[in-house]
Image 1 (cartoon, rainbow, N blue to C red):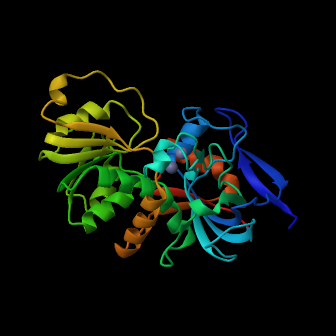
Image 2 (cartoon, rainbow, N blue to C red; image 1 turned 30 degrees about the horizontal axis):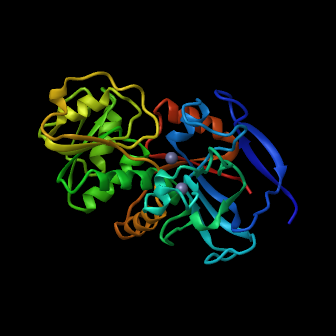
Image 3 (cartoon, helix red, strand yellow; image 1 turned 60 degrees about the vertical axis):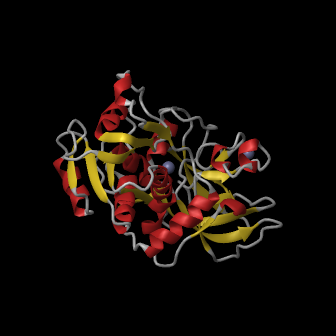
Length: 332
Ligand SMILES: [Zn+2]
Ligand SMILES: [Zn+2]
């Protein structure tokens, strides 16, 4: 197939994305090409643009891609032309390193990351390794499904890592927390949401999604928490969250990048509190989470932008002006 594709490309760290017309990308062996239906804007994209997460420049960001398969390379199995698939952050793994061989492909030594080391979905078309694409449940619209593919998925992995506790704190109430709050409520848990101090709108949003309590990140919750998940890229939240969990409690850092964690007294960690990070995702996480999202009737709250307004969407996310998730939609 010939023709052209339109992409929003990052040429250098800190630059605005530039609209570029390119020859239509062709899928190689094991790959497929989708027509992009929607692509979410994730905080990690800001880290890529700011040079805080390594990327191969020039790069097309975007790793929450919902697309319709329109071309298949050789030896692709299990996917057909016309299928709707999701393309997440984990674009491919080596399959042979100790992590891949022990069921921890999220920690692969030689991974491919969509929108960082291979071109992503801020585009009209994208090519992906077919083995790493995920089926999207039919109940979700294209725009609605996009944030599930990273905000939802990484949030879900974080929730699992947080353990089975009843009282869960969520630090930072954006795209990820608004999905995970719904899952945790569906599981019957109690949620305590922390926003930027004074963000009354954010706190109302959290309460509207079933959070028992919402306040500023400088406040203590009314009860001791069993676990806390930190979605905001703010290292100072780590000691705050450790203080909010009881003995044996867990604090999970969900982001790929965070500002430095300030020093804190050992007493805050003492009592078998644990602190851990969540890195990437496995394909098994993807299949498990999308099935649960469907079952739990998750509804994502999104703001759609035309593809060529990617820079505006990024600016709004950066300024914290979005409720829920930004999603780019190519005008076809
Ligand atoms: Zn590997
Ligand atoms: Zn992401």
